[in-house]
Image 1: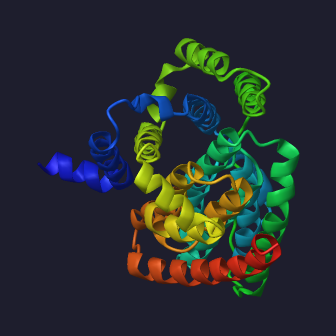
Image 2 (image 1 turned 180 degrees about the horizontal axis):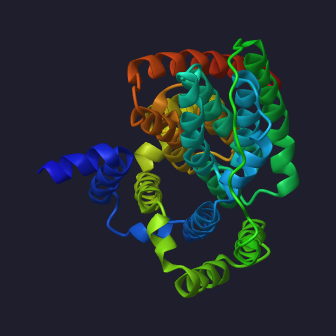
Length: 371
């Protein structure tokens, strides 16, 4: 019983998604093929990206890059600004989840030497940077990858929509970082040596490029996952344990759930009428309750407003801690650190997230949605 409770606490979103999927099977018409709504291409690309980023992390490349950039850092403020920038940029390419998994522990380790001054503030800003920075590429987060694939978007249209939001988001983040005050000095010594990993680095870089080519629909996803899977079995099969299978299963459950619901005529018609002209706001609000990835999957089947959905679920990643899986990762990592103050973290997290959420919503509701 304890193991079941522990699993539910650890994989709450997966448990809820599985429950919804199970119930929806009995509500759907008998002719529905429940597996038909599963987007295998999204799952395959996510799997491959998880493998590649796990390999790069194992090589220590993320630690090396961050230590190189931070080697001459003397103040907490400069360290914080630089680290938030690293998270913002890296999240575009290795996903918001991975960026936080890599850099939040590093932040805790370094700021522990300063009496943990500004630790909560820096982690909160890193989390916001990861959620907003990751919106700028199709592979930056799971909801982008899904929407890009589901609507068959072209890359220029995608960038045209997200770049203004990303630019404003970056200005807000940097504005907050620059007005923060701290005069504590730190010393950060460069320790890692990358001279022995040149060949493995080239190997993982090649696999990463393969994933990008697949996202751009130049290469079939079946070929991509076959190459990555076989290469991983040959070189380092332990990386298969690093894949977030919980996230993949959550996607599958929501695919089944939403696929079944859209076959129920009464529900489908009612939801289409309700969502008409409200996709942007509905995406933001639903993200606060069920997280932005499930929100993207659910709403996408009832609207053609791909760009409003894209903006809504990305901006909607701010707000509550469950609005984005990445935010839960940050909270988890911080809560497990020495002398953690979870209550204080949630308070500061909520203040900054809600304020930025309201500000971005007000700006882009007027710029895009009303036009």
